[in-house]
Length: 200
Length: 247
Image (cartoon, rainbow over all chains, first blue to last red; front, top):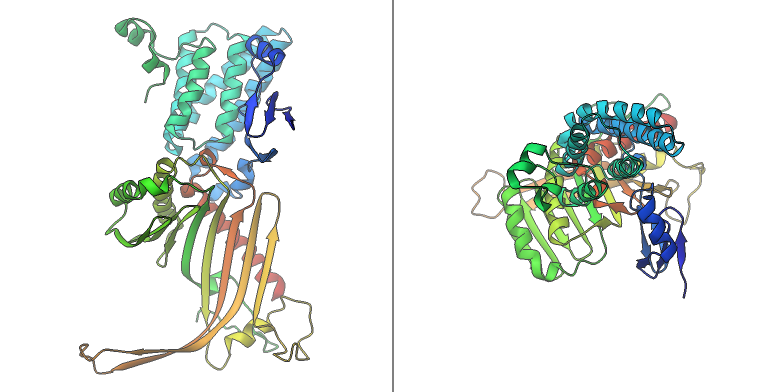
């Protein structure tokens, strides 16, 4: 049976189906993958790479200013999350927290570009709420890695639909991030699936 | 004509893309065969009716449907869809119409990725009758071939030039051709005009540019509202560079 090992996603891809080996499954639960869901597909046993966003929009400065600005800000946010992720893996919790605080400061300007799409706005808003609910407590390695992965996914697909963004929101919730305001949770009697799907 | 098209050596040249007039804009996406089209053409039409003015069905078959609207002609097929407009003055407005159209298509046909996304711009440059368009194209220094001798017992200069640049992510094809002929229109007797027939000489250089993606594109990556102005800007910039080099 022909199988292709995809190093980026650490998954074995074979004839259009994907399965994780037992060792990979156990490693995924301990330490989440750094990479977003692979931007590729399997076609007749061949891995096909999708176009990069910077190649697709050859001159984004000519598109809407919000779009161009969002792409720049997302690059900065991913870079900060990567640094934080590296720092926390090197047990430098303070440096990781400092980088994530700088990332938090980017969320407002990122949200100002919400005209890009509902999916984009939902993800940025959810990360903002997650930071707010932390109330200054530092994020752990799983949470930082998940935020990094979600931001990478968003920088790859900035115009994703609201429905596609719900998957990212669920990932953030699974990482233990509280994504709904405490007052709302109290009103509905605890976290619900509806709240887990972000707030429009 | 905005510019004089004869340089000092009495050779036809093009100063920039702004010499041309935009005749047609086409935005097209291709995807893996979407068999849901068999069930959802009606739903697509009703969704589009919310966004497009005076939408009418002009052709409907199981694998292909064509709708006409003020914003342009909409074609939905099993493996591709496109919006064609002959009156684009603002790429952002056209991009907005495309965003509405392709958003409906992707949701109804459950498309997650495109195999190709393309923007085709067709420009034309009317020329005076004393400068035949076919010979004008041949006078452009697009090829290093001598124009002294006749080739293929047809003509000394090419009457149509096609060029393609293709990388791993995107590609662009340019076609320059002369369009010549006579347009005869005979009006029916019911039309009470002084003239029963209208005759128009056509003598133009056509510039047909097709900019497209080679690598597949995820639906979450592509928004025509942002992509079309960006692609149109790239086309304009690169065409102007070419015209500057050959002038």
